Amino acid sequence: MLRGEILDVGESYRGQVRRRPWILFRHILRFPFPFIDFEGWKRSMRKLYWLFDNYRITGALFHVLPTTEMPRKAALVDSAGRGP
Image 1: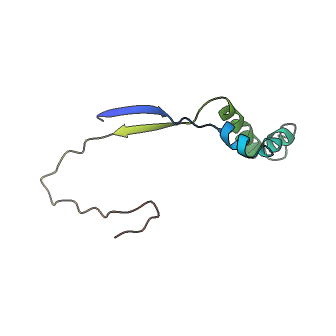
Image 2: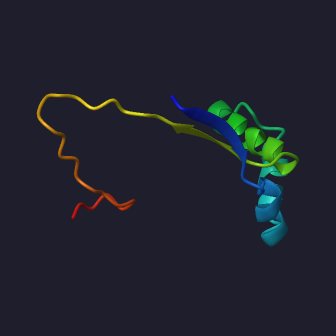
Image 3: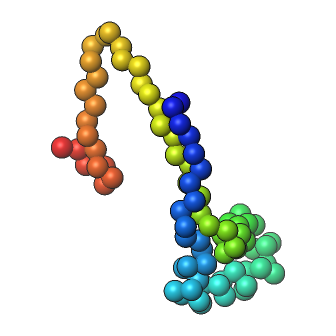
């Protein structure tokens, strides 16, 4: 690994709530009912953390050593999963 960093995106869940304030009511209404679907309740409560902290992503840069075997022929694929 040549370099690794944790990058601050500069956005948070606060921006989504600012655009659509009614989505905050979902968390408020769900708060007293963890017994209905506990996994969904935890996921909903976890989003509240991002109201006060910016999203962060992890980036890593690796160096791949060349091999003396048959050269690799990697297909170029775009983000939609389609090849050339």
